[in-house]
Image (cartoon, rainbow, N blue to C red; front, side):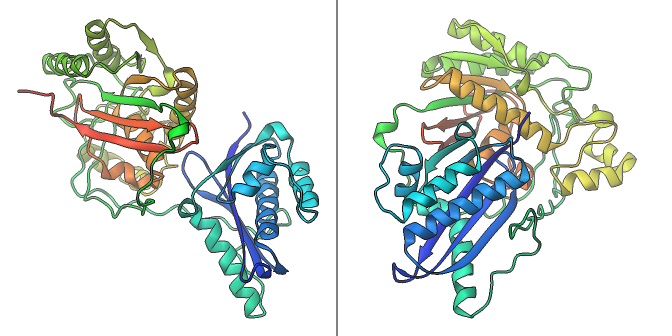
Length: 401
């Protein structure tokens, strides 16, 4: 399967025309990791020329990584996005050859364009300003490494500190809340985008392993709901019925989710669709163990797992990065299937946290900084322009003892 990349590009001119430069970054759409960066001072030029130069550099960087990849370009230049999307004519003679060059880099079917606010294009904007600053000083923008003829550098994944008070069942972990990333102030979806697709995220009810805080993924014993878990499922069903907004129910194939989904769907008069991508991570040899037991038996593997989303549990388990890739695929498929509707996804801790993390654009280590209780409700809304909005997280107000 071909890769999917996000290219964010920008360009600027201090004078318009004036000293100009561009910046571009290629991102992994699942992890948010910067795969390549490009920036250059281009002398005297206009903003529009610099923006097109940034687009060209970003597309070339993506092609160097994988010429078969599908690419979503995100820019805060409405002009470039609309012209490259074919909705606006290109009239300026300086723009026509640049647009033609951009189109020649990858087949048209592999590239889509999206406008984003400047606040969301900070990475590329920073690179463009670094390039202009270097040019002003008579220097060239220097990355950490180069690849495929472009000035690119890999951005290392930040280390994940071990949670101070781990709480594991379905791979959950808790720690003090991290400082959140800045988000655009006053952001709101434009009215003409239509109704968002909303995922109401229900974590399954308790099993016998939940109060014991044991790893319980998709590779273990597949426990059923406990009596407490069945009560929680019924309480969640009553709350969702009272809200009256859910139009479809989709469940992980794992038993505890199917049982929870069946209770809710019966109350709502809906059928349950199964989606394999919503299953919990496979925790390999850690299945059924407590965090302390894993620490005792597999200390090095546990440290590696806590330090990187790409590390897998002992014995052929599944990394959080791998989970994120399949969850993102299911997310995109379900958004397309249920466009503009509200869908209940009955799933596990890791998929719920992953959907929240991706919606917020948060780093992988944020998985260890969210608390998700059994039978809790969260919600994410997805808009037609690609933006997402976290509406609810870990709501347990419907649960009674």
